Amino acid sequence: GFERYIQASIVWFCLGALGNLALLVFTVQQGLNVVPEAFQAAYFTSQFWGFMALMALAIGQRVHPDFLGISAPSAKGLSHVFWFINLGLALLVSVEVAQAFRYSRFLDYLYLAAGVGAGGAFIAFLLILNPFQRPSMDLKAMGVENSHVKFLKTAYTWLLLASIMVIGY
Image 1 (cartoon, rainbow, N blue to C red):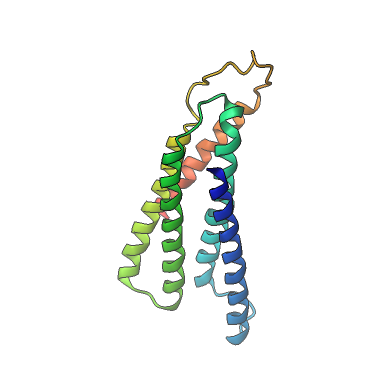
Image 2: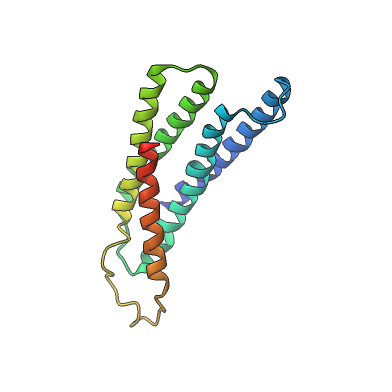
């Protein structure tokens, strides 16, 4: 369920914090006063896609079916997507770190595959949650003020576009 996504989000946050500490040590050892640009992509991926996006997906699958009046998503489908998202992100971060030390054409192909996998998994999540479906219950009849529906659907549209951009990034 959504708890797994929250736990993974916290793990990504902790990995990002450890990575940040390692970058600090590396930067000082190299006599630099800024983090080398080559490492910034890995940090961004771990913190934005790993920590923040997974937390948003956890919240989305827990509360948005009720807020949008839609049916609950498939737990089995979201479980499979969970692993694809995390494996794809782990591969992306690993390749980004490896490329910071040594460029390789093979790593470019691996990065492309990981980006397609992770981006595709985010898109699959959205397809399983399906926030764009017609409500299965009448929110107004239940006494729920529904001005948030357009906002949430717009937010999911932007998440979908950002997921597609991960593939192209």
